[in-house]
Length: 381
Image: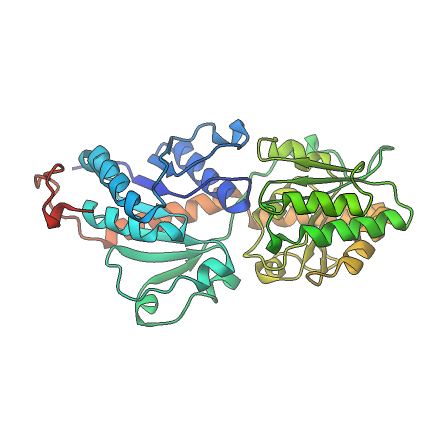
């Protein structure tokens, strides 16, 4: 009897303009391209560029991340998919682990968890076994080293799968710093303290004070936006600064900037940085976490210490004054993205792991009748 196509259920929380959400959507879209049976369930996805959601079988279900309500929502999901159960459940937000593990247990299917940041990895303390959880995927070696040790965690398979990005045709990419308009310096991501946007603005102020006529763009939204606007006003940058939210075209935004900055105080790897590199943009990044496994200082980008606005300003000025250096770093970064961070490689590694987990997991008799309306303890999620 022929084996049915691989079925994958992806679970995530709120999808926003951040690298981890873009990675989730790339995985979902890639599975669809390969004609696998897949679906993505998230708690919300408002405010994103609609093109990011194209060709994704997406179901927005609010409440999945609320502890008590999440159980009721999970029961609804179970009733909807129990006749065509996924082979693997892939969770991309560890905060949903309790709900995802109950759903996996009810469906009698294996669960895989992806971890994208240091804080998320460090908080993944498993105080008791999660029988359906079979593997943990980390976005970088740096993130994997932050997983708490212990008998439960040690028993799980752990694997690093590097992010992948779409590599555009280089013939259609404009060179950075290649015209008479004022150069654009940009950063992107959620506007949170840990992303270092305040240091970015202070660095841009120093660049302007040094006599450079620049434009500044910050793409993203979050709790720090108001304070960042106030800081920009105090630094007399408001007329030079543009905030754009997640509804902007990611490719259009990155193609419009000349120098991409990643001033994070900590970083699992940096998906948006990889997107900028793929588009041939020179990158200046904080030397933290997984960034150091990607950027080799002065070879394919520039590295600065985190929270050092003075040195970040010096590096921006350096590229503005040496445009050929900026273009050389951009070309090297694009070559690295092409050889090491292709979307196709990432998808193949995920699909290979799904198949390994499916083959290694005993499959119970699916003809067993499930009383989805029962309230007995054995039927509760």
